[in-house]
Image: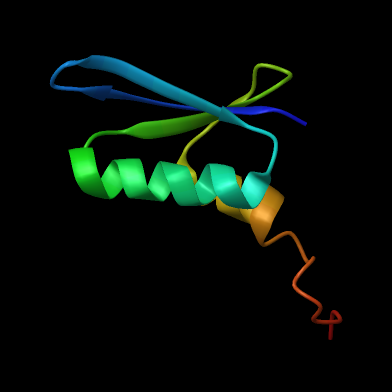
Length: 69
C-alpha cells in the first residue's frame, strides 16, 4: 500500500511517498514538528488522515502483539 505525506511549508507544498505505514507516520510527525503546520497522510484509495487517525488505523491497530483482553 502506498502513502503520501503532505504539508505546506513557507517555501510551498512538500510531499513524500512511502509504502510503510510506520515510516509514513514517522515522516509525518517529523514534518509536523519541523514546520509546525498541518500534515496529512493520504492512502492509495484517496482517503486523507490526520496524524492521530492514521496512527490508530494503521500503526496501532492491534498489531502490537498484545492480545485483546
